[in-house]
Image 1: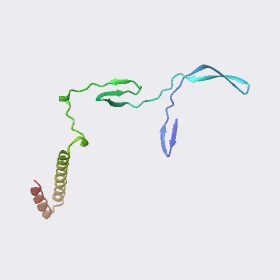
Image 2: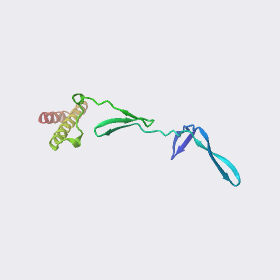
Image 3: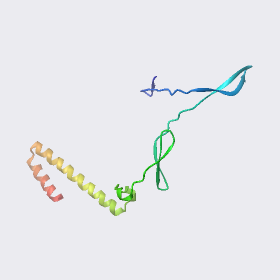
Image 4: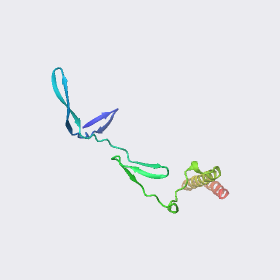
Length: 133
């Protein structure tokens, strides 16, 4: 079934729900009727990676829990998140990234100047590269 919401079209996939006759009977305006209830209502669950007291586990789409294998400490080589670093380490890392960005931008400017044939700018940028190194 094609539906539209705020101008965005999407395809709706209806989930079939099997109904079961209930033992509950009702009376409405003198007429007896029997309630029906869904046998199972499928509710999709998000798959999540969670952690409880340092032990990782995973919730699947069906809502069940699965254990996650823990890698030995020596095999883990992921860098620390920025908020776990000391201010000195963080400042050093930021300075390295800044220096690389300046070098990359300067190299790009030099390539553009060479493509345009601007000798004055090429000399100026080469001096700047020597000063940066």
